Length: 347
Image (cartoon, rainbow, N blue to C red; front, side, top):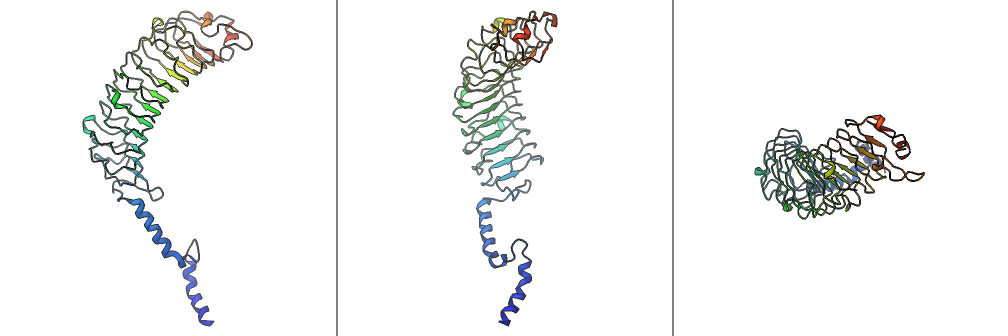
């Protein structure tokens, strides 16, 4: 009995040294080897010295803002790769061959050119959902992009043309940023994007609205192009469209077919900085209308309300008409019944 007490008293300091569990020393070796085996499973390759792979989130690799000029070696277990804000100039075919687990790939703000991106560079990334390539020097969309993509950002490049094969098969794509490029033609490239809800093709060189637009669009941005007219039944096929921006184009009254914007569901319409002389007919459900910096000469109340009564009136809350050829005196007194929700009409 005395021998047992002496043995326990000798081991007690060791037990107390275990901060989380005083008896952890009894099973510490088995726990440690289990942890080591987990780490071995997760590893799949060492983290490059120029990057960080935090132990708290071992499937992420942070290489952003490191002054890199070439792609690092990517361990096969990495799912989230951050390479933005570097000076990387190329993505060779073999650069991502081992990175088959990638879900996010962030390569914005680099110096990538289309010629330096291998045709097979993205071919094996079958789980990739987000690809950020904005603010580079690409003149075309890279070949063989993963069909699994949900969010594709290509804005602020030098892309001149979008072909049907560039986006073919991207059934899951919901967000596409192509703004601030030099696109002149999109052909029917958007036709198969059945899940697309946000499309931004503003600040390009488009002279007409692209054909075969996806019918489930929720936000559609077309401002800062040179579009002078809209197709017939432009918005009739969209069931979920709420926001459309057509500012800074060349639109005229003749270029807008009757009832183009008289569609329910639309929340915001921006037609500012065009060449309109009349207020177009809009739906009574529209809430925000921007018409500043046009050539409008008359305030037509019928553009907002065909009938005014207790239940029938415009839901418009924001109306901007400043920078036109009308003044506040041109607004009829009865407009307060039609535009009863508009807290401020800027003229």
